[in-house]
Length: 576
Ligand code: OXT
Ligand code: ADP
Ligand code: MG
Image (cartoon, rainbow, N blue to C red; front, side, top):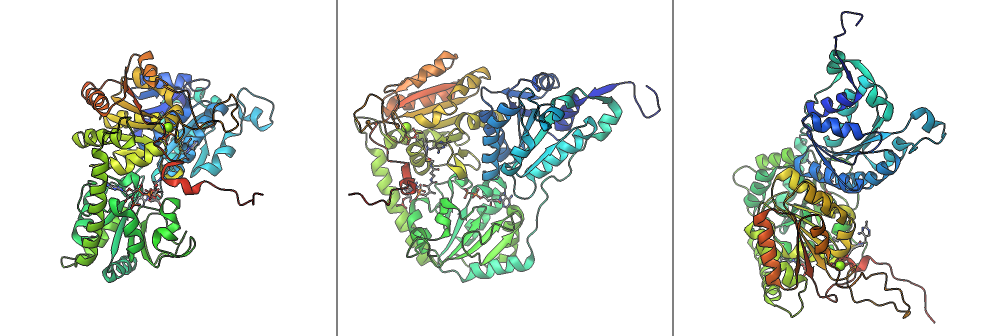
């Protein structure tokens, strides 16, 4: 100790990273240890952080992304250099695509060697590779900059449109020592990381004028609306206006799916019929047929249906990305919805009864049709007879989290299983990506403390299935239902050549996924009937023990790509 400003104690890069995270309320990380972050994970645990250690970084990354969506705070994924980093990168890109706040912190190799490409251990220019796949990417070289690096990462992840951020921490940084008091002073507690963004009054007026003119208004809720945690105001907006609403899959439950204004069961009726559509945190991307074409009543696939759009979004460049937006409302959903409510006053007219009763008629017909199908009990369990059970279990346990992936396993679950509370449904999202299952399930359990039900296609499950060990290790209340139809979409395809190899679409028949769970001390059950499935799910929820139910589904029950068969390209080449 040489001068007055220095204290007796020293700190180092390891502890500054930990202190900076904790100072900002981040106490859980999802990751996978190894050089150069092994000691960091040990020290994190020693300093009271919860470290959830995975079997593959992609699953840790998906867990971090789900945590970000659920809490509005950036979920943290920690990986080793090059291959570990790349394994986590898919999840980071997926988080960015879905607007989930997440920070991928990765250790990296010696800069001097990497930059001269001299062949270091796990050499890779990670910052350059991450940059195009996330919102922002930073590298910290000096211990005294760790506070700034973490503050910038947090702010970038959650402000404006949320997304993924990459933070590169070279190995050498962790061991760097500095004076403890100076280190403490270098940390930043981020103030107002996701500031409210108040919409302009003229934009609010424009939106209200358009909404007032509507004869057949529709509200579309996207996952941005769920993320915004403005549930009470969204409910008031919907109920005050009486406008039918359609939730996108991860917006299900902002209001209960059983709400009388929910138009999910009349989707193909309301989209082409509506004249003014209010989009709340939903993009007009492929999931909404880009706002045009037959889905919207347009003549051909490029023709608009003639609807007028109001779009609430925090991103000012989202409007007009697919079709003209007549009234963009730029701001955070909480502020925008409350500004709309304030502008409506107390005498706002309800949506025309002719429209709402037409929607209700269509909806009731479809609901009755669905009830008929669900009541059937075919000799071999299919998606309907099995998901009818899941529907009941979720109804009885509305606080449980639901994770869902697959093709038919996804699409049938989305339309059959009602959600009752916001942010309870986590699924494949904007990319329709397989592999989110176990990462999302772990985060859902860790962040909510509630039981988790994961409805998984057998193919989908395979992408992250090894994490059943993680689920057992942390003793998480996760009940996985593998919808086992022996394959991708269906299990009955054969090799058309008659050769020895199976069709690319099918798996080993009669596979016992339940045994995987038993291998790690969890509960494995094989269910061939709805009654067996019900018993096993009820027991799993009650016991909170890690459980995997291998649900045998008719291998011929699915269709190619589920509800999105039409996206498969077909050859235009003429055949002789
Ligand atoms: O109005 P109509 O009459 O049309 O009816 C609609 C609703 O009104 C009605 N409905 C209801 N009726 C009554 N009551 C209620 N409550 C109700 N609710 C709704 O039902 C219908 C349907 O409603 P929906 O779903 O809202 O409407 P629609 O038209 O389908 O909506 C359009 C979409 C686009 C919004 C919707 O379809 C959607 O969200 N789709 C998402 C699709 C998606 O993302 N799929 C996943 C990707 S598929 C494929 O890519 C797969 N891969 C390749 C792969 C991927 N993805 N990733 C990676 C990393 N590698 C490879 C693979 C490998 S899937 C897959 C595995 C598949 O095999 P699995 O074994 O896992 O799964 P199985 O298929 O089960 O075998
Ligand atoms: P979905 O797939 O459910 O239709 P998308 O992911 O396409 O939803 O759209 C979510 C939208 O919500 C994004 O355009 C994003 O910018 C926006 N968004 C996210 N959080 C907020 C927020 N707090 N306020 C306003 N818009 C938000
Ligand atoms: Mg399958």
